[in-house]
Every structure is written in structure tokens, then in C-alpha cells.
Image 1 (cartoon, helix red, strand yellow):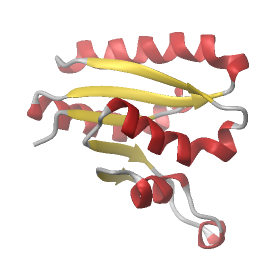
Image 2 (cartoon, helix red, strand yellow):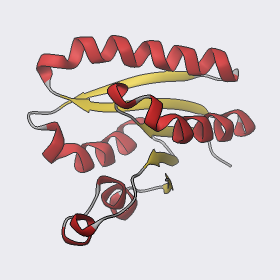
Image 3 (cartoon, helix red, strand yellow):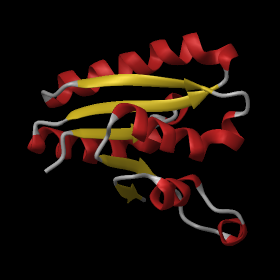
Image 4 (cartoon, rainbow, N blue to C red):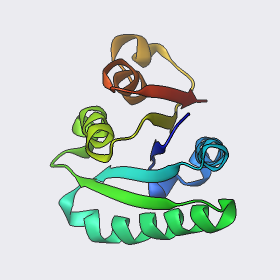
Length: 131
């Protein structure tokens, strides 16, 4: 059903994203799909983040018996560009499913659209948001 699953992550928030990563790994394993952990960061942090992300992808692959890789996107202002950069990553990688974590909505979410909502609205594939 799925051949490439994209999982947006922040390596600094690995524990909080465990549920989304575990779900994506399970779906990838069941579908013999490739899995890509993707993050958006500044150029100043890219090298450090890339190493941590690759280590995480390697561990996911070993733990789940699947192919997992990492993809780092550099942005001038990651917080502002995150949603659009993730949609670009979907297109660049050819992912046919995005599995991403979310947070419990609050008042600000009714005023400002969250990243998961942006990706769900604009990605050319299915998006599974995990809370």
C-alpha cells in the first residue's frame, strides 16, 4: 500500500516523537516500505543535526528490520519555513505517506495554522497526524 514513508522529526525532541516514529516504523515494516526521517534546521546547525538524525535513522532501521534514512533541509528561518519545507521534502523524496507528531491544540492553533495542518493541507499524499 505504501512504499516510502516520510517522518518529520526534531532530533532534540526524540522522546516526544517516539509514538509517531514507532507507528511509522510499524507501517513501513508491514508494507516493506522505505522510511525517511526528515528535519528542517539552520545552516549553522546542519552538520551536527545531520549526524544525530542519521544515528536515529540507523537505530530505527536496526530496531525494526527496515530501510531508514535521514534527510536534512537547511532553511534561513526553520520555524517560519517548516511547513512549506516539509511539503517540498514530500515531493523531493517521492513519499506516499507522511506520519508526523502533533500537540494538543490550544487557542493559538485557532489563530495560527500548525505545521501538521499545513502539511496535511498541501502535501500530495496521505498524512497521518499522531497525537
